[in-house]
Image (tube, rainbow over all chains, first blue to last red; front, side):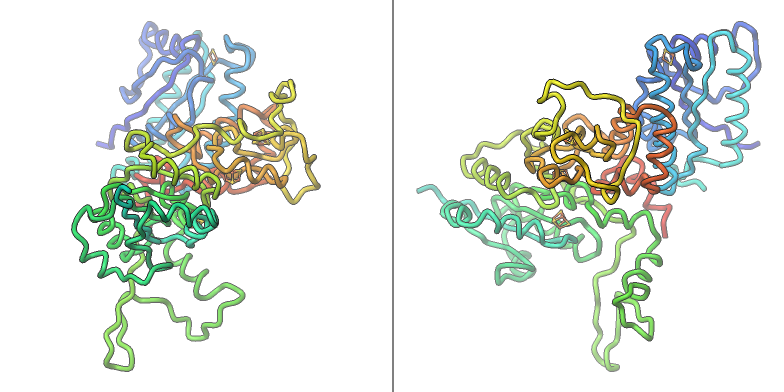
Length: 137
Length: 328
Ligand code: SF4
Ligand code: SF4
Ligand code: SF4
Ligand code: FES
């Protein structure tokens, strides 16, 4: 059996967290790989949280926020997007595979989308193998 | 008069700029020497050898500074010995406390670094392509050893316990003088602290928009210092010249800003920052106007890791975990 990755998910309470809830209500099937942390807004996810998760051995990190225009704090998700674009490049430049880190806009109505993203991300991480900080690939 | 404070200074993997900075407090150093007795300062200043340090009783030195990062086995050894012989150990300067410039070497393999240093540089004359080896037999009879390169650069506190941290590459001499006064008067914070005013470079910087009752506006364009000439009085970041003043300790008195150069973070992270590079990303990204400006930022500077971790890569949380097994 291929390995079961450990994904840390930071989910905005107004959208992705509700989306995950809906995925449950809809009985969508997706692998039990993600541990969700509810945050007030994707804009409150500091790049330091992402690095800390990876450094502590998470195989992947997912940040879920509201679609553009839907952020309850107006521009939190725009900031998230800029931060994570730059963070991704910084991680790559430091020699770390930035595919372990993903940003998605998933609304509270997109339960199915949530399940798909987790499934897809899990598959990708299985191909990448365990996080090298754990002494893996 | 009370006994003098026994003082030691060790150069580990640094450039000795930090030691020069201490000497730069000039005649004030002479006054300070009324209270300090230099019992060890090597390999740069005093006529003492490592073996003299090794011969000291444990805890003999009251206060020791170490500048430079740990880059080879000699640094590993001397730093460990110095720790044992010292009551209080201060990681002095960016290299010792954060990894410094040399820590960026961890983004390359040893082979790349050696080729660059001993073969490829324009000024190198090495037709046989010789590289340093830890062991070497000279003229068939002298068995010589050189310190070996460590797998990665480490900060002093990744090797031994450190009591205090000082930022700066090097620390500013006025600030060093304040430090010496604090030491002499016994006025030090709890162990484990950074010795700092706690203010950010922006708090000291005369260009700070808040000082001129101006709002900071989203930044829509990006420049490097080679592009044009920034206004001498306005905030550089506001002008699009990327400046890390908001997240850097300002014990330098905003030195770079006084000469129209943006801060690159040698002072070390302001309190509360866990990972300097990640916090730079956060701060700069939040100041940009839109995604297009973020893209432009990336293109202009190309290597984000070397920009954001210019002085602090060894202390970066991801690097600490990654490098040991990951890089040859
Ligand atoms: S911190 Fe700067 S001045 Fe001090 S040893 Fe390192 S490179 Fe030299
Ligand atoms: S961002 Fe740089 S130029 Fe602007 S106030 Fe801060 S230190 Fe000064
Ligand atoms: S302005 Fe920044 S880079 Fe320049 S000396 Fe001060 S802390 Fe160092
Ligand atoms: S409230 Fe959902 S991303 Fe800001």
